Amino acid sequence: MKKEEYIENVLKHIHNKAFINTIANELDEHIDDRQAFYKDCGYDSDTALQKAVEHMGSPDNIGEQMNRLYSNTKTLITGIIALLVYIGGLIFTVIDIPNFMIISTDPGDGHFDIYIYIVSLITFASGMLCYTLSLKHRMKTLMTVFGLINLVGMLSPFTFLAFGYSIAGFCFEFPGVSVMPWLPHTIGVPIGGENSNLAYILIYTFTGLFFAVPLVSGMISLLCAKEIKAQQHGFFSEKRLRHFKRYGALLLALTIIGTVTLTVEISVYKAEIWKERNLLQILEPANTVKAFDVYDSIELPFDKKNLESINSQQQYRELDANTYGYVLTMVYSNEHYSVQLADNDADGIYEEKRIYANTYSDITKSDIEKITADMTTREILDLLPREQINDYSYTVTENGYEEEFYIYSFNGISDMQRNPSELHIIAQNGTITQFEYYPD
Image (cartoon, rainbow, N blue to C red; front, side):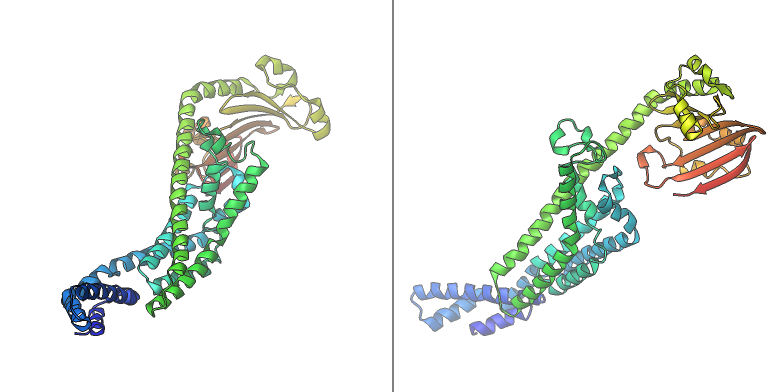
């Protein structure tokens, strides 16, 4: 059997046509090496070639072995799943685009929407996996589809901003991370705190580069698909292939770095939340009692001359009375509560007292939804004690008294969302006159 015929019979068994030329070249080199060996043993060229072909074994067996070696069925399934996850991430960004945009418009607002960062990371990682598998196993069609999806993904350029910000924020400044005292210069202070303009510039610049990820990935993927097609027709260039491999290595490195930094950031963020929760559990009871003792000791109307009797933290501001026509006076505050008096007509007599929480309570959305507009304020206070109300004021009026409630639900302090559920109630003499509920 001639060498060309032998190689052709082997290639009939290969299903992954992307490696046809690679396998043909490999077989050709093996046969040439074996032919050279037999020639060195004293055989003439034709005999040496025939013995070299016979030495290779059955072309059917070799073909089946090569087909299993270069089979990409499982890899193709994995690549398709990765591509679907990638598409899902792009679609999710479009659906929830306001929250993804906030990272680009105001990353310094100090809020940490964990799910946005996780979605951004998973989308980036699935894209990296799809690109890497397509390149390694020469899956031209999958690489082409991935490239086209990336170009379409340019319509949603905010997908990877959170991913880039998690890396940039870790290096410079990030909410919550500053509680790690052993890395003060690397981590910096929390966003929104006393941070430098340079840190902001670096964060914005590095994060902004991730706007271009869909464009860059799309162009490189389509060029790579073109190179894979060229290789299938025998136009092989190891130099060109190395460029595409380098991009895959860059995506892999960024994925690893982003996974590590985001894991640290989430862990520290959660640790800080639990630290605050524990602090509240330790300090709040005593502070709560003291704040409400001060609040309850004030009987309205309250004369400004009596501020010293309650150890007020502020004096009556005549300037405010003359300028604004009303006066607000802080009479008590601690880590959790503030008590304030209001003279709404600047006549020197306080008609309103107010107590509000300086920190978030553990009230949940389901608790708020138990309150209805036909309740009395006494029933509300039986259902939700004053300690669970974020803002509560009591005002004496000509016809009795008025109460006002503001209640916010963050579903517990360990799961705060950007837009809380809000309940606003105004009541006259215990009867609700205004009831407004805004779900999150």
